[in-house]
Image (cartoon, rainbow, N blue to C red; front, side):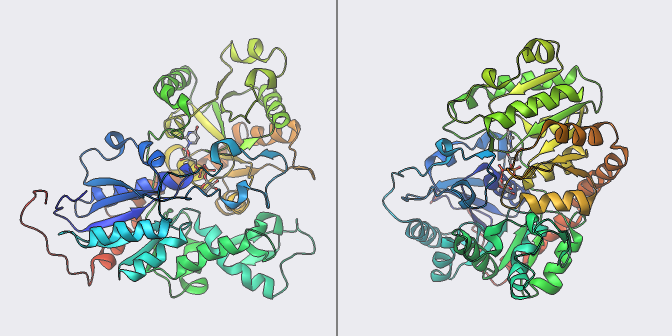
Length: 494
Ligand code: UDX
């Protein structure tokens, strides 16, 4: 830090959690790759910062990394600590529980100090871009008269629902008489049931509602919102947000923000074997015919309960297709004891299935020609990666937060997915899984065709003249406008 940088600088503030950090790194790369912006990425703790492989992500780019010296930053997101979480899911508290941070300041003060330092430097930043789950970034930016933009890491479909919910409650549409009936209309979004909308979003009595409501309030109070999507994918929701739901807000569709080569959390010591695991996955995929493999993964932190893992193993075996399955285990569980008897010799040894129990190279797997379908929890990064890198249909098994709404969008909006239904206790039986897998892998030709079309549109959106590049340019123009940036003559450090 302290180097006199030649280009206008933007400061990006990343949230913890892979699902949030990955798109922020993608944004840093997109901005720096224009050659016109220098980027400083601020992490909330040293662990998060150390998990970034600068050499892989930012090689040759003007990107610097900084860490806040702050205490009490590792808040669990609300859905991991209870609330509207599926009963059939472990809350993996061991990896995500609040850590006693070493720093001495509250996050707001730590950020204020860092920004003040940067603003006093010869190349002061032109704006801050913060993850939408960091509302405390608003006050320091306001106090220092620095423009603040927000990166919204969930889909535009979910954003539309989140901001329209208040109206649904006022109109007594929520709570619904029949929570499963799909007749809730939100502009730009396929018809929803109450079941498709996480409770903490609309129910003010939910203990996590105030926190998430604050995230959303601080998001629209910003100077503009960057969405990790591309216009052609979510045009209805984006149009509805612009014209009807949030007409006064500047929205920029700058996605897909995808970075490859991310590892698991720093504390996950097995990250060290990432390289080896990657090769194992790729070699295994190389041996399989085109579009024959089902990829199964539930993102970076969700963990299925043990008996659900066993049920899924049985379903994968009887589906008859090749599968590559990333299994995240609850503390104290071991994969060997959860697999049905004889599974290893019948399924793993002959090469029918590959199980990864650490961190898989998801983007590489999705890009591989052998991958033909994806069982996903509908985390937005996973859905985007599936659309943009693979162009294959999905088995949608949503668990929490934005995922049920995203599932509705993938199934009814994009028509490239089959929904998994759980029973009243939240359990999904093997017949349900097998059936959905068959619809995707055997009968999914039309979904495959449509998914391929979105993949093509994603490539166009990301190209030089594509909608996402234009939107990124519009954001940069807005952020740079009015800020008197005087490029320095010397590239030397101060
Ligand atoms: C969370 C929320 O759950 C999600 O709904 C929200 O939209 C973003 O934040 P997460 O649950 O981790 O994210 O899911 P997802 O959004 O799919 O992000 C997971 C990321 O980790 C993806 O980029 C995926 O490629 C990567 N990943 C995950 C791996 O590379 N390897 C793994 O083994 C697991």
